[in-house]
Length: 419
Image (cartoon, rainbow, N blue to C red):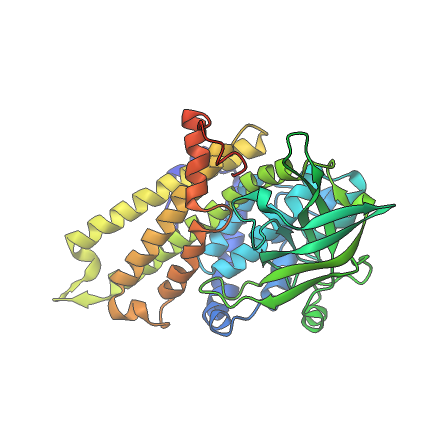
């Protein structure tokens, strides 16, 4: 697949980043592209490619080698996700959710023992994992959390559910939030926990050699629900997580009691950078498909790409991609350096989500009637793009975060517990 950007390389990428990009790009082209459409149609999780991605180290790109990782950085993780998303967002989100949402909070807030037990399994791709925050009554409003954790001796008992969880069925290690009390200001005290369960697809996991660990101490009373039948990301596994008197050892609390909401907001900053990378990749992939199609398709005796109106649209498209790439890479570098990046992450996620929606609609339009069929991947890309304006905080929440940085908090406290 051709490369769109060269100038950005000089500003952000090292030789190691470029080598990684070529590795991921080749894998996506050779292993994912031939099967992406069929996996989408069947809504089938890509177990065989998950095994290959684990062997290539994709799940551990930003993590230290001592925890089973590759030892690179946040920008390397962004590049990995971006390149996968150019071809198939279901593959990219499977890797991205593992890095940004499952492993990241354990790495940032976990004890040494927790990192040794869980990070090594996630970073190596031995098992898959996820992040449980959203509930039927708690999406943008974290204070709506209903899942409860009650301390009983040397353990906590969890009851409740989480919804729309990426890797929810196939995963075995999860970080989730629960209400553990009431804060001094009367708000809910939210804490986070590491919980484990057996994958829902044990036979397939054993067959490919990843996705299950026999020696994990599984959480009693913790299970996954039915698989969601989604508009996009159809080859990604999305399910409900259910807790019924789940017994969680006290040592599985992640971070300090009552710090769960604050820590998860920091996790979401990283998740939003990751989501920006997914959406940036979708927009780039759609452009590359459109360049190829308009360069081959002829009307009125000329290539479509020779018409000035088309050329101007493609120029605008590339310009927006360059802007989105600078925003996303900049936020990734800030996070890697440990610098504040809350609104930078929100800007990158918001911009790239709207870019992906616009770009994929353009791609379908430029493909004409063919774009509305499954003969070309742009219709799948259009469906995959929509979730970008919803997941990891809606576009409205991103604007709340950005405007708060610009203008300060509003006089009303309506948005006090979002973003």
